[in-house]
Image: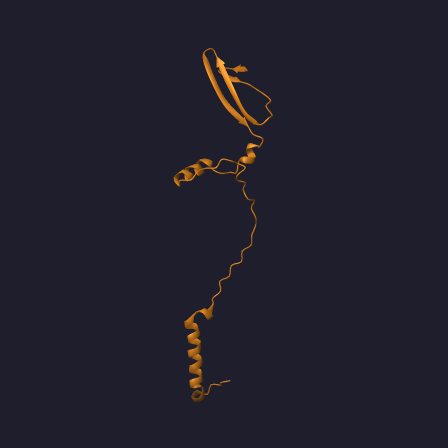
Length: 119
């Protein structure tokens, strides 16, 4: 362990993934802690999510956060084509059908007097 001003540093070549503990003691002071090394890179686990915001939303909606990165793997984006048609189904509207029948009957009624051609 080397001392640089008021800070200490320690360099080690830990290549095996796992949980590690450390303990530092100097004089009567003692400090300990732990850290972990994961086989997966941190960049692979970063999905560009705002984790504090997601945690707040889950606590407000009585949900819970799932921290296991292997549980959730984002689906890659896929392009999709969507065709949307707005069709007017005139045969489903009763007033259009009744208007057609009424106009047809009026034409048949006035055909002999006004000279319409009825086929």
